[in-house]
Length: 158
Image (cartoon, rainbow, N blue to C red; front, side, top):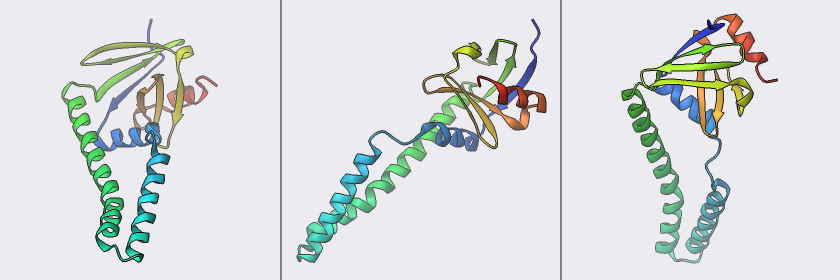
């Protein structure tokens, strides 16, 4: 059987970050983390007002430094993960769209997914994300799609 549509995906680091930002959502425990940091900040300011400068300064420093450490480590982890993905050939693949399913083909092998089994479809200005299982999406870059394929993806799983 011949594919109805074909699209190539060639991910770069910016594409990967955009995907992670769009599909990643908020980290677990974000609300609790914010509440704890606000409590520490409040306690730090209270200590500073009470004349306990060492303890208050330490608490305020923790509130400032912790988010910076989180941002640095998460950015570093995403770069390392992308580099590993690129080394294994997981950033360049072709997607073949058929009437009732689509297939992916890369250097690592093939995948076969029925449209009826899709968990979610998310569209952004630049991409389509077809969630084939929880936490795993097939990325379709619009710049590599025909107008017919974009229309087909718009109508998919309404």
